[in-house]
Image (cartoon, rainbow over all chains, first blue to last red; front, side, top):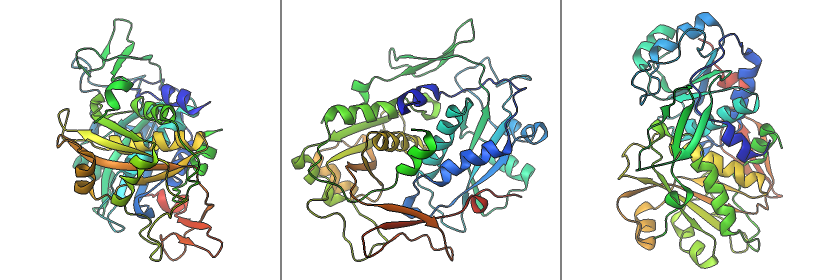
Length: 190
Length: 190
C-alpha cells in the first residue's frame, strides 16, 4: 500500500472487535518501527510497555479519556474494547527533554498497525498518577502517551471542515465523521 | 514498499545533491500527508510554510543547527545543501497547546519524502527569532520545526549501540553511522 493510502486508512478508531486478539510479537514488530524512527539528537529516550491480555488491558482502560467531543459516549463498551495497549514512556535517566520523539514514534506505530489491519487511538489524556500506581511504573519514567489498539469496527469518514468547527461527530448509523482543514488553509503564504 | 522498509530508508540525511530541484507540488503532496494525520482533539493547529527556490532556501539555512555530535562539521556545504524546506508552525489563534501534533506531522512528511526518493532532517534546533524576523512570521505562529529536504547523497548505516553511546559518527568514506538501542532495551518489563 502506498503511504497516502496507509495514512488515509490510519484513522483514530475507538470501537473494536474485542474477540480479535493481538499477539505480543505483533506489538514487538510495531515498537520496532518506532525504535528505527528519528529521535532528537539520537538520544532514544523512549521506552515501551506492551499489553495484550484481557486482564492487563482491564488495568489500563479506566485511566484513559475517550472522544471528548462525544458527550453522550463515555468510551468503548464491552465487546468493543481495545485488545492491546502500548504505553510510551520517557526515560528521565537518559534525558528530561523528549521533544516530539513520542509523536514520531506514535505515528510509526499507528501506521504499522494500519498496515497490519489493526487500528487505534493515540491517547494523551491519561490519569497518569493512577496508571503509574496500578502498574508500579517507577518515577524515572514519564508517562507520555498510551496507544490503544484493536481490530476496528467503526467507519471513519473524513470530510471538509465547515464554519471552523473541528468537532468530530457520529451519525445515526454510528459512522464517525472527522472534519479536516483543507490544504489551502494549512499551507500559508506570508 | 512496505512500512518497515520505508522506515529503514527514512534516515536523517544532511548532505544532498543540490542540483536536484523539488517541485512545489511535491511539497504540497507532503503537507497533505500531514494534514490527513492525527491531531490532538482534532484541533489541527499546524500551519506550513514551503520553500523550494535557491534564494528562499538561502534565507532559512543560516538559522538551523546541524549534526551536533559532528564537531568538525558545521553543516552541509555548497553543492550539498537542502533544496527545499517545510516550516511547521503552531497557530496560537487555534490553541496554545500543540502536544505531539508536529511530531506526528513531521513523521508523515519525512516518510512521504522517503517514498518519493527524497530525504532530509527534522530540525528543532532553530534560531527562532532570527528566522521569524527574516521571513516576517507573525507572532501568532509558534515556530515548531523545520524540515530540511533534498535528494540525499549520503549513506546512513544503522548499527548496534555500544557502551550506551548514542553519538552518530562518520567514517573516512563519509558514511554516517547511527547507533540504535536494541528492541530488548526499549521494551521494558516491570
